[in-house]
Image (cartoon, rainbow, N blue to C red; front, side):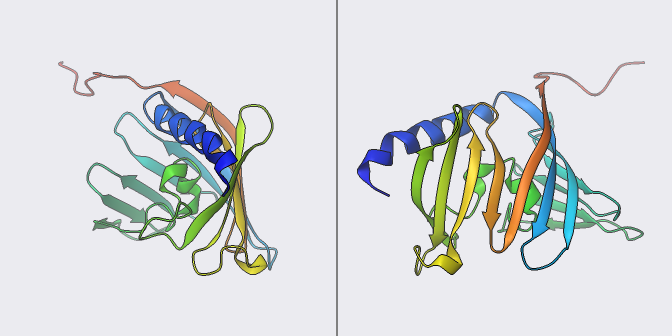
Length: 187
């Protein structure tokens, strides 16, 4: 990344941090595998009033709930009891559909647990940034390249190419967080 791109990176990070506190967000993520006709569709709920990131995979009975404040993960497969894990180190890439709604947690930024590093940040269409990245060991190798297109207002990756998979976010809608809302009602 050259120094002319630094202002774009600063704008992107500021927008993503601000979006985390604004609204709950809902949408659909479609995952397509580059090497086969395989695909999956996920209904995602993120930044909920409980602070969770959740998805239901269409047609499978598979669901995931990640609670960052507890570092807990609940996974349900159709017909099986829920599995609850604590301290899961790979949020959100154990469930990339969730990562689309938490771009700062994607393993693309060059952190110690990330396998990738950012190579370029550029404005795309108005209100969007395109982040290009590659594997830490050889970030410009064609086989290791990926990208994410991030909506600055929503704080959501609208498109991502990552490890041979293509992700697209659609049907996005927001709902203001209900701060101070008590779910316990007196009878």
